[in-house]
Length: 169
Image (cartoon, rainbow, N blue to C red; front, side, top):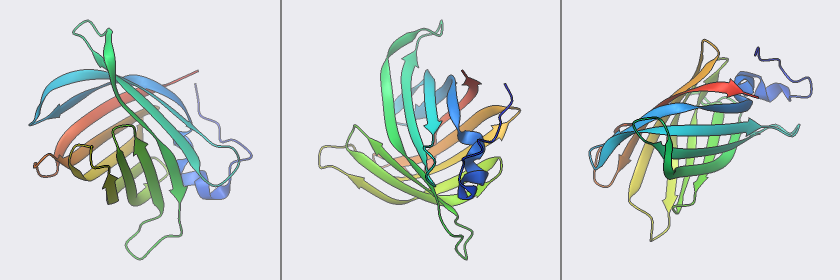
């Protein structure tokens, strides 16, 4: 399916328009404190005519046959275009997790690539230690590809997640 720009999309969202839709696919999770595994993911990115995008992501552990084993992470949030700053920042991503973590990312959106770093992380007293994240999203051969580096539980910023998702109806 080809992507068609929605005519009621605010102009500020043009660099993020390729994110809009429902995406599904799989990826790999790993970190020094956990065993590497495959995961499935579904993302729904939508807008209601205002100058932001709504983001909902669900992941689940996959077994060796690619079947769902159990739920993993869930995140909900908003992509917000902002006036460009001298360092090139022109987008924010605000994310909330049911594990007691709230992240605020800032970065640079281009027509087929977004790169973001945490500008702030808040966590409840009961959440695991998490101090920083770095994410990149790209629109590559009609797929949504993304990677995340994380600094958590005493570990420095390093590779944590990557996935390739296809647009689905």
